[in-house]
Image (tube, rainbow over the protein chains, first blue to last red):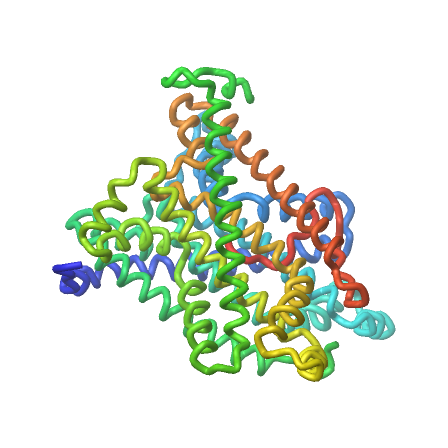
Length: 230
Length: 255
């Protein structure tokens, strides 16, 4: 293990920082889009909407049963075809790795978020639904103002933990040759043969970010506990 | 759509054989990796509940490190970085392992140690969920600390956590696909290779995806069966929340 030279890391910092920004952006976008879609998937199942409910179940089950890399490959291949068909262009419309990543992560995470929300919906006390009904609130109002706020409160630590996993999973865009933190490190590492320094450094970066984030979640878990649940 | 599987590749073998060979590596990684993860996971999980501060801290350190670095980066650390940090002779020997073994062993260690951190947390949760009376009763019967753990606490904790271990089993089999980044031709890599050779992407990916879905189903049913066999009577029923074709796989462990 002679001649480890961490000055190369210092030189690469601006590039790595750009990569990290990409990872964080992808995480935030996929979190927002995935959560909205996940809530929709969960509600459709909870309300047992005909046709949509079984479709949502199958969607979630499939997404959760195949590896993320396989899903990335699927979308990289399929999305240009679908867009091409939608725009009647007669040929695939390439959308590039960035959009593939955003679409894939949003749709993929939606399946995981929906399971968390679905369990959250079930854990809300039945009396809450009944009380809302007694007050003659509409279904929409019941969910928007009574049920979902409680669900978010109960599930927020789990949702945030899932988002930490999402942040780690964004490293897999490496297989689409995108320049996230891992991609940036690997490009520089292969350029000047500094694999050891680069990979050790980004491992440390991920470790610091994810450990601090999960400490914050642990604090939040204590704060958001609803005294009367279960 | 699947006729691509019955064409021959440049090596004269059917593409179906490519796919099955990929499946073999996927299964080998998942199966052997799981037992590594289980062994380390139980030890570290018990360590986390140890009364010795040093052991508890070391176990915590293990979990934090292996849980908070992406599995892809860990894969690179095992494959690219570890041989450089070993003594020169050993490092060279590792680097000269013939393919596929040169990628298989790092991938195996990576998935095993990564999943172990997650298993450890489940084991710890299981131990903490046991009533205090169990340990007290064991102490009253004159069992030593070690025997209490070995014969009373751990066996019960393991039986309690079988449902939540299901998601870790699912996690490790899905994470096997990360091994393609270090050149192991597992199932996903073979599907991509077939697609690149034939341009029949749909058939290639669909075949691999169906295999993954079947594997998920088998793993899930297997865990249900194990749970039914070892469930502790009288504890809360661990029936899955719903039981359509694929069912609920529990909380997610990993990608």
